[in-house]
Length: 281
Ligand SMILES: [Zn+2]
Image (cartoon, rainbow, N blue to C red; front, side, top):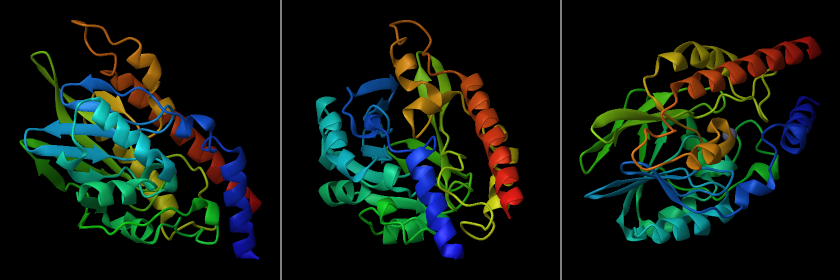
């Protein structure tokens, strides 16, 4: 019975929630430079970020399984070689962000770095706690390095820092890295997500999920960063900002307030969902 309720809740969230699969998720989009060595290579709705260095490149998120070839074409369209991708990172191990990782790993031979809490999901290709929901499955990939909060990933003089912001998944990772805009150095921040989406809070999707969300909302605001990115384009009005990029002007992606607003929205939605699920119990 409990399982049946969980599956029903997950499917309802998938079909009707804010995270419902939308046609923009697989829709091709023109890749572009965000700032410095950081490029957008995702689809219209689902992000993939390429961070280039003189010693090879890092790819953060791929999107759906079928997005892998779009991301590969976008990387090539910018003039970069797939074979130069040395490290694959993810925001979190859900099919809409990590679904294409297995193909990218096979095509590049890159090292896959994943937070400890998401290793099981990445290596099984499942949604933990909703393993029965086949719509959430994705091609699994072997993790080469498991990381924890505060760990760093370095390549060619660029260092990214992992901030575990768990709840949405057990290993949800907010990545930060330095980017230059003219003479100024900024910090890119790709917030993992703290939406409830298909997660059950009561009963818990995974043990400790409610405490993880609460901790994330308390600590996420302390993460330094001002070039605000996200795994879903809509989180940060990515295309609205892209349209405002102009030569010689400060980047529209330098927008700390957008991050604060995103956290406010997701925290309010989490509190409402938690109250609703507790009342249902
Ligand atoms: Zn997700």
